[in-house]
Image (tube, rainbow, N blue to C red):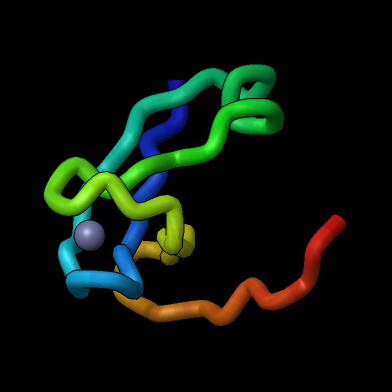
Length: 54
Ligand SMILES: [Zn+2]
């Protein structure tokens, strides 16, 4: 299973989630610290802005 890195824009907490692709498509990741859904997936070693909504 792939591991996704996320950063929370609410509290700047970085965390990882392990998700199946099918789950990832329909579940909203939440920050484990502040429960915000204002999180963004990042690639290891580089912050990538993923502003596009599919
Ligand atoms: Zn947070």
